[in-house]
Image (cartoon, rainbow, N blue to C red; front, side):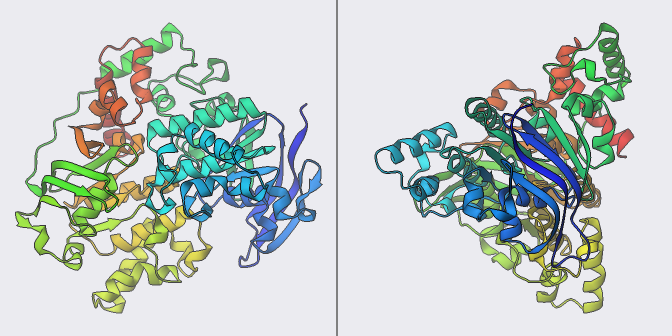
Length: 569
């Protein structure tokens, strides 16, 4: 057995502001050289466990702890926060909460400056870390000028410059496009192999993390460790779906076809899974038995963009003659690389930014004649970072704010706010302050605050980032219900599952232009588009190839249709 780096023994923790503990009887050991994934539904205690590992508990979050947590044999409560940070490097889920420097280079160099590393060694190490995460062209930029994915890479580079015993990643994929997420997992895997440090990853996107092997998956629920086993053992059980975590799509497809998943099949990755000819035949038979999905009818155009050009003050051109149509009542996904112009396009639609050229029409009317408030009466916008939207102390007041500013009667406000809170999984926290919520829970607050306004178009920037499968499904099913009532839903997303399962059509952005306008199954099986837009080929297509199905795109479409019609009608 390798040397233990981290050990929890019968550990429990209760925040001072909470009536009951968040963690119960945690027993977990992480040894040098191990790579561990910690998964579980939102609110299960994953982030609290992370805070116990990196020392934020007990030094920043007051509460009562029982049992013990040791790092390299020493009780963390007897160590200083600085001393813990020399052993544990952390990349936070909320990148904005981690920045110190005024520029990217300063932020990456922060730990080295604390260690009094002089020039030229400091510059070389900063540049090496920046190149490793492909952020070297932004060293002179302020962190606030970067996209969510770029910020995540800066935080990762800031950890890479240090030589620590344990690397802790709190939802490192939350704001990354699929291809950049793959690169992040490759980087984490490379760091793990080259440094020999222990690695702990906390993440909802199980299939994406398992792009590279992990030694163990620790599944949490309601503050307890439910399962601690190998990925093969976990995927051969029903524990993931029972506890609100989305299993890999290829596993779901195999189960639909009646294939029993066993550890001996090595199911942890689509490339490693071993299927007998009989099992491949079952998949083929399932595919052949599914009816081809019907074609969607085209509805009237609701919003039209023509020749939109937009450049920021620093000269960066975000939109380069972009044109598209959004149709009434459709569910549209917008995907593409980080920094491709997706969020900028959303801001232009909402009036937060004014294009230098081009036209936006809403029901044939020029949107340039609408004020931001007038646009907000028709178009609701949920931003990527919830901290940039929240302005009230209490959750209920935050969700009610838009209605109160519009003069809605208080009795109607309560009814509509309570409905939105229930749908977004926030009803138990209705009387809580926003500050007590996790990043993912704050995201649901901002979605609820827009849903209560019942706009004609609801535009959401990464609505499922940081959400477990249960809350993800609740939110997306609710958006689907709104869509069925005729409300147009536009989702900017890096989540390929969302594109496949919910959207009618996908617009793919790359370098300020739209390079594809098609259904998600076509997009995610087109290698040229996937490469240009930093997307990732769906594992359903890979499963079809593995099973000898020639029409991989058709297989993906029939899987989607089966889920929509039979599993989630």
